[in-house]
Length: 181
Image 1 (cartoon, rainbow, N blue to C red):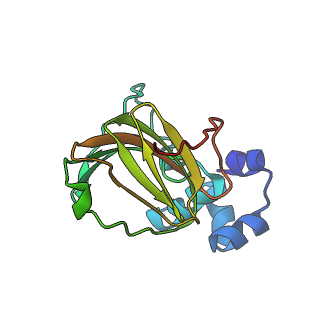
Image 2: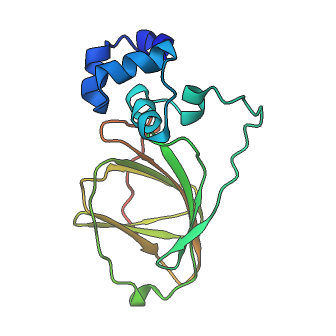
């Protein structure tokens, strides 16, 4: 743990302030006089921005595959495509066939930055006061402070990929919006 702290260029005092862990506890962890529990490892992993596996020295599996566990929320199936907590998170969304006239947009806003790519179908994106229809192969990106909502643009299912990032973390792909015709 000491090597990780030194590599990050932080002091015990600064680490204590950012994690809420007393300096004496951090010092004992670094010297091996104390074994860390989950209540100490989680804030340290967040402070160093590393996976928990790296802190505990878990052996690498050598298997880069992610084994997603899909879940359904409000009728939408969401498949997580990343396993690293924090930072960029990737998801596949599957909206079932629906009558678009029965979908009432309910735009929401939150911290972060959003990038999406439509795989199949036509996705309706309400972004602030604007209304877009994205076709398969189109990309959109926006600051999530702007109220936004997604839904079916027609009665067919829609599949799209989305990447959510922390505020200020943007993507290298830039897209321009097309007005629906």
